[in-house]
Length: 272
Image (tube, rainbow, N blue to C red; front, side):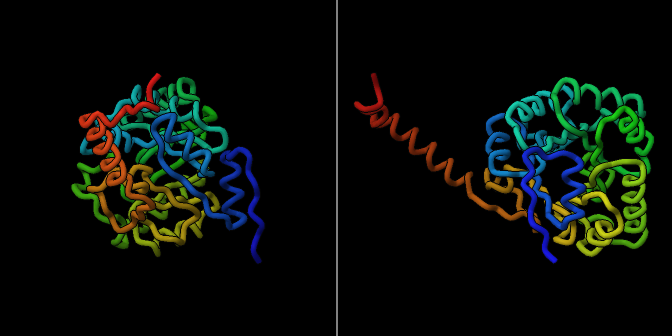
């Protein structure tokens, strides 16, 4: 039996859990600045992730590792000021939570106080359980992240699909259940087999958001700049481009440059 879609005026962590219970898929996109976040929020996206992918798409780094906590707070603050409806989740960057649980809590408190974000996201399972517990005990909502964890890229050595082997798949399922049990409100699964992702989603009551994890999960997330085609070098199988802004913007900017050179811009109607 189909369930009528509820009109959520403000998305909360409880809204997402209700969506899963009602069979309503969750939409999630990244954003890193005020202008883009305003557009994403107005379009009706449920969750905005201020991802450490800002390290790649905003700063041009090869990996997510270089971005700092201060920089994440800057991006998150810009996004929060733009948003009326979406839940804003902020990535804890590499080095801000791995050393010990007290450091993880201090980093999370800074994000919540200085950016106004609604929740934090951490990469990892049993190895960061104590840090997640510490953050949750302070009343800060936590979204988990398993599968391909980009902050561990130098350990993996590749961005290939994770948990294809039985042992790693069993550990991932165990970690997912642990994250639910200790109190995470949702979980991201990145680049794992679709069958495993569906099994995880069916095994836990909290929402599972996939990226390269198939359609059997409770929602989807993509990097905004990839989805609208501002980036063009990155073309994984799971990415659907809804626009080709790289081509459109390059053409428009080139035309502007030509119009300036030819003295076509500004014309008589474009001056005082």
